[in-house]
Structure formats: structure tokens, C-alpha cells
Image (tube, rainbow, N blue to C red; front, side, top):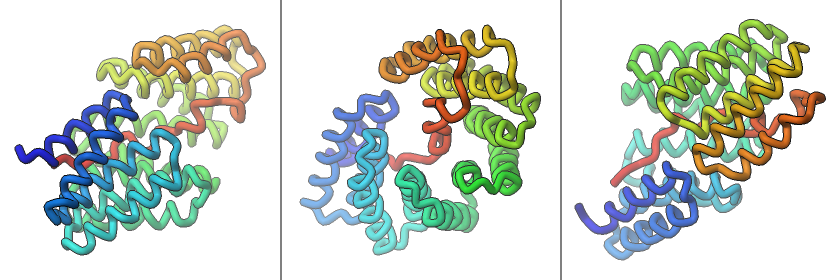
Length: 278
């Protein structure tokens, strides 16, 4: 494997392990090596993956620059799949910046490009991310349609992990519609699937969402506390100490409200957006 591609793949793997500072170094190295050899396609891939790591580090303006650079380079090489992946990542950063209309356009563009290339799994990811933005815009019926479409596409490809992420997001929309029974059922289904996959970070998010749903439904405070405790335990297993501490702090708070939920800020929107490997 060429050296720049090896650095890129190392950075992608470190990102998956949530070792973001190390991932950033590896991906910057890959980008610089690709620039030295005038490898436009390789540069685009490295810039895209840099953008996703910068987003995780909450360096959103830098992430936006990296992803816009990746998109433009992918356009230069007529790489439709690369453009689609980068547009979807752009949408997640724009959502974090509160630029919801632009995020919606980005995810719609990604969805349409994935349809063109026949990439069903990433099309599902784009539909899921669309649903997350539509929920932010309080267009709940459209959000439900988007998440249900994502779930069905993930079922077609046998992607149980993608289904789990989408079930969790469906639960958050049903909570907004005050369909608390449906929201609890969706949350429990997501948790079971994420636990089976040993995706402890997203299981921590899902347990936090379930805690919020129990609270919004006026369910017994013991259920709320138990869900927050499970969220903290899952985050701890993922090595996410800050998130674990935030969930742990909620365990003793019986007045948890939906608006106070840290998990809500992390609505699982980009879990199925592909990184690009060399």
C-alpha cells in the first residue's frame, strides 16, 4: 500500500477508535504526502476525513473548510461517490453550526448522488441525516418519513448497525410528537442492537435519549435514573469519560427535562456516513 494511503487508513481507524488528536496528525500527514505527489483524488479523500475528525473535535469552521476543499477536489476528478460522501459530511457540520437550510440542501444533494451511483447503504445514511435536520426544523412528519426510509434501506442491505442508529433517531422524533410509547419501544430496540454490536458510545447516546423519553412521558423517576446510569456505563466502556460524567451527573437529578439532555445535542446523525479509505 502506498505510504499516503496507509496514513489515511491509519487516521480513519484512529477516528473510529475516537483517538481524534492522533487521527488528525495521521490525516494531515496523508494530505501533505498526497499534495507532494499531485494526487488530487488522494488529497480529496484526506481532506474529507480531516473534516470529519475536526467536526468530532468541535472545530466546526475548520471542518467546514476541509470538507468544502474535499468536495471541490472530488468535483475536479468527477468522483460522484466522493462528492456524495463529502456533501453528507458537510450537512452534519452545517447542522452543528445551526445553518439548517444549508444542511438540508447538503443532505438532499448527497442522497441524490448516492441514488445515482446505486449506493443503497450511504443513501440510507443521507436519508437518516435528512431526518435529523428536518427534526431540528420541527418538520416532524417529514422527519419520520426520512428516518423510516433510512431504516427500510438499511434493512434491505442487512445493515443492523445502521438500523439501530435510525431506530434511535425515530424514537427522538416520536418523543417530539408525544408518541411516548412508540419512542420508548424504538429506543429500547436501538439499545439492544447497539449493545449487540458493542458500539458503546452510541449505546450511551441511546440510553440518554431513552432517559429523556421516560422523563418527557412522566414515567417513574427510577426509570429515568436507571437509563442515565446505563448511559454513563456505556460511555465509560467506550472510553468517553466526559460524556460518562455528564450522564452520571443526571442520575441524581429527578427533574431532568428534554431540553437539558446532553444526548439530544449528539442526535445520532452521522454514524453511517462513510469515511473514505485510500
